[in-house]
Image 1 (cartoon, rainbow, N blue to C red):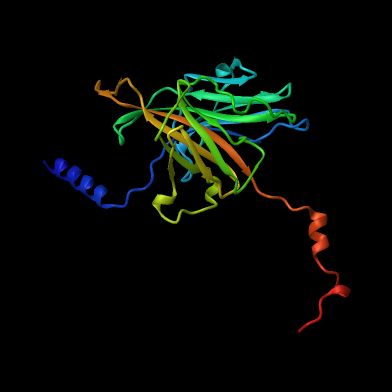
Image 2 (cartoon, rainbow, N blue to C red):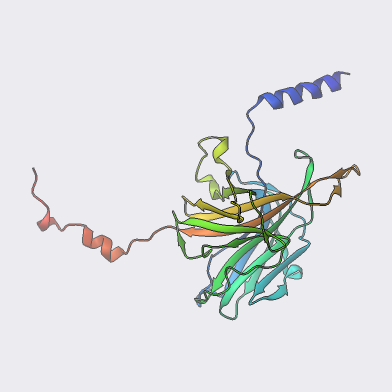
Length: 276
């Protein structure tokens, strides 16, 4: 009886406390966002987390992990190695790039049971990396059940650019679909003005298109959410709904000022303007 009362009290207190954002994101984060002749290997880390708060969840070895280039799919699942990120199980890969092209890395995880949401989560996660100056095929579909197709080139962007994407399911536009947006707040360099600011939220229009302006340099994640038409059984054997997420990660670069240009702007001692 006492245990029941204590549990009930904890439940009441949890309802009275402010709720923090709980957006989940599948993540594929490369060590570099483009491939150059000086660095021909892409280091990728796969994880599952709340990226702004840097709160991790364990990621089982994915059900599928592959790369698509020029409509050719290459399986990379057996090349993954265990690692740890945000104190939880994650996966990593060193991928040697041999030819110019635009590489779409895609992860399909096993269903993740989230008891606080009373549902399963499956996030089809993608990141797009160009190599050796190639610029074709970045807006191609990879064939996942739900997917974000970028309409703004997903690389070579400055902070402050507005990302444009189209959400589709089995190739058809998904109208009025919620898209959660989070910044990967590495080393907690920023703090949120409120809980509402942790996860930004937009909706697609009638054509499945959404826009969002990225205000900080770094990695931004977009998760278009829908509910699957099927159910899965939870650990207690009860049938539960499944959240499907189409996730895309893009990188925003900070503007860089030419050092010689900066030096020209600094007046020499003999050319200082007169004092008023």
